[in-house]
Length: 220
Image (cartoon, rainbow, N blue to C red; front, side, top):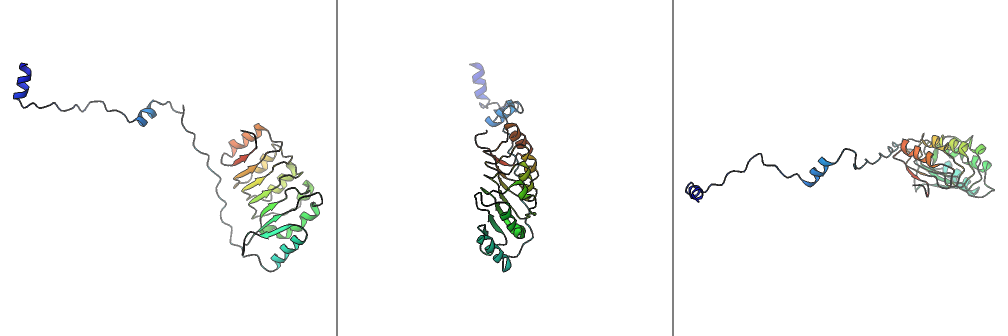
């Protein structure tokens, strides 16, 4: 009591808090501080492949090129400008056993103008694609539902090096095709279900090219 009376007479001044008093850490900081490195850290998202740099502007399709595209359509090959006034074409070979290597040769004169190429469901063979020219503007390549093996697939992809999307669904492709796919610097998506690729091959490719989106059907 005497001490209390003395404290009141002195002005009842409360002692200043100690600077050394421990401060409560924010929940996030406390959690981070107590978490072992690498224990449950979120893995960084894989970097996507760089976009293909813009190619020199080509003049719109006109005159003889439009006539050549019309001639392809007369043969049953769908060859249409990507859009009105476009400088590139989408070219699709019709499906069926009657459409094969001889028909494929007809697109060669338009090779530099093809942006989308589809051989899906055609009867084009490995031998038939060996003489195809380079398609420097090809961004999408569909070889699905064909009999092309790793040999033919490699031949096509070696001539479409700027491809961003490749479809190999229901082809005899094996892990050997990953070598050709790995040479495509701008590849973003590849479709592989119904092929003969193995889980080991798929995983190795994913490690080598983590930014590529691969659709392998039921595979994880």
